[in-house]
Image 1 (cartoon, rainbow, N blue to C red):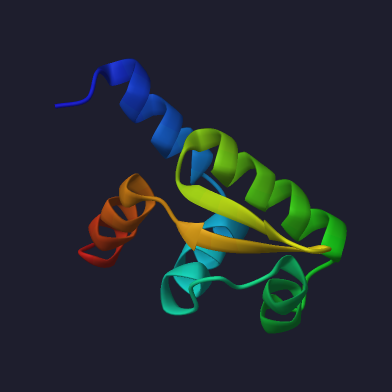
Image 2 (cartoon, one colour):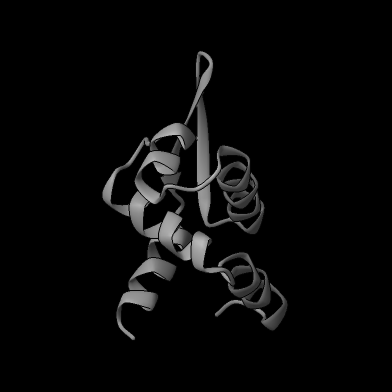
Length: 88
């Protein structure tokens, strides 16, 4: 089991409605870029970029650079966290 400090990092990382939506979208579309996420959520690019950065920092998202674009995917913890959220 994770320590309380580690669990806090995951919960704080996902503690925003945009971040929860981003996790859901990335879970459905592995390798999606920020531009596509902004189109789906109809939210400012800068806002989504900041939220994806927070999710990466929390360990819930992975990012892979493909030229000028960045592909996002769920980390193993992100996948488990998304499953946990869907069970509510």
